[in-house]
Image 1 (cartoon, one colour):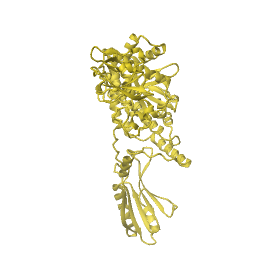
Image 2 (cartoon, rainbow, N blue to C red):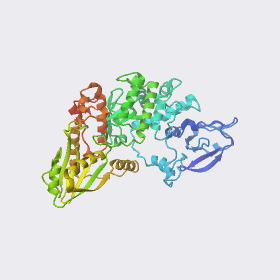
Image 3 (tube, one colour):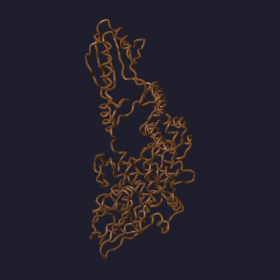
Image 4 (cartoon, rainbow, N blue to C red):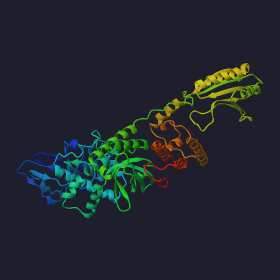
Length: 564
C-alpha cells in the first residue's frame, strides 16, 4: 500500500506499508461518487497484529482522493517520517475539510484533461466548478455543511464500516453526485431512518462535544421537513417569498444563488429551516417543476397520505410521507425533462393549418368589375380605399367556434391589383370552397395560374428542433416594439376570459371561476401563464394578476391577491 506525504501542500514522497489493509471503509456501492459523502468519508486502515499505531496526537489528518474505491489513496498531512517505518496499524481521523484536492494543484490542468481528483470526469465538469465557484456562502449553509459531515462520520462510527447511507433512498436508480447530493445528503442525516431512528436524533442524544449553536441548528432541523414550496415572488440576489403547497405555510427564504435562477410560480421540493425573522433552504431536489406538474405531485401526496387538504408538518416528517414526496417528484421531473410532443396546428374548423394562396391573372381593364363581383358575394367585406396599390376583400362567416366573444370568423382574404388577384386561406378545404365561389362569380374575367402552400406545422417542428439545440441569446427589442407587444397581449387576454379552453373542459375562464370545483384547475392554469410570463424580459411581461382580479380569484393555497 502506498502513502503520500505532503511538502508545501504538494505530494513529494512515497512510503510503502509492509502489509495491505484488510478493512477499507469506503466501498463503491456505499458512496457512488457523492461529493458530499466522499469528501467526508472516514478512512480506517487495519493491518495484521504486531504493528505499531500512529500517534493520534501527532496531528495526523487524512483526505480521501476520490477514484476507484478498490485502490484507496490517502493523502497524509503532518506525519513524522519515523511513523512510516516498519509495520503500521492506523485509524485515520475524520476528514474535516471539504474538497478533494488542493486548488493549488489545479492550476496547470487543461479543461478537457481528466480531473486530478480521480473521478474519471473531465476537469471542466468536475473540480473546475468548485475552483471557479464564488466564495460567498451563507453562514447557515456553512454550518449545515459542517454538521452534515459530522453526522455522516457519526453514522459510520455508529453502524460500522460498511454503513450505506443511501441504501434505502426512495428512488433506487438515482445516482449520488455533486448535483443530487444537495437532496440526498440532507435526506440521509435528517430524514432517513436507520434501525428506526434518524441520524440527527441519535447524534443529539450521544454527541459528547457539541456547541450551543450546533445544538440549536440541529434542533431546528429536527422540526423541519421536506415539502413542496412554490415561489410567490423573487428578489434577485437576496431571496424569495415562498408558500408550502402542502401545509399552506408562508415565509421569506434567503437564497442568493436560487433567487437568480428561479422565477415566480416555480415549485421546488426542499427543506426550509426557520430562524428568527427569516428562513433558509437546506436541501433541495435539483429539478424545479412548473405549476401543473407540481399540482399533480401535491395531489399524489395527499392521496397517498389520505389527507384531502392541509398536511401537518409532523405528518410530513414521517418516513412514508418523505418517500412518497421524493418518488412523486422524481416521476414528475422525468416527465418534465422528456421532449414535449409538438402540437398539431388547426384552424377553427379543425382543419390542418396550411397557408394556401391561389393566384389569378385579370383581363385588362377588368379590375373594377372583379372587385364589384367579389364584394357582391355573401359575407364579403370590401375596403373602400386601396392600400399599397392593392384593394382588399375579406370573406367572413357568422360565429367563431373557438372564441365566443367574437361574432364572426374570417375564412379568406382577396388582394386585387390592376393585373392580378390573390386569394389567401389557411386550409385546403377553405381554399377549395373559396376558389369555387370566386371563379363562379368572376367567370372569364380571371384565369387561375397557380396554387402555393406554406406549412406552419413544418416550420414549428423545425423551430422546436433548433430550440432543443443551442439557444440563441434574445435580441433586445426597441421600445415601440415592446409597447405594441404589450398592447397585443392586453387585447388577447381581454378576449381570453371568454374563450372555451380544453384545459377547463371547454368552459371559459369566467365560467370556471363561477364553479367552485373548477377553480383549482383555473388557478393552476393562471399560475402556468404567470410562470411563463416571468421568464420573459421585464418589458415583454403581462401582469397575470390582473386576470385574477377580473375573475375575482384568490390563490388556491389561500394567499390574498396582494401577497402574490
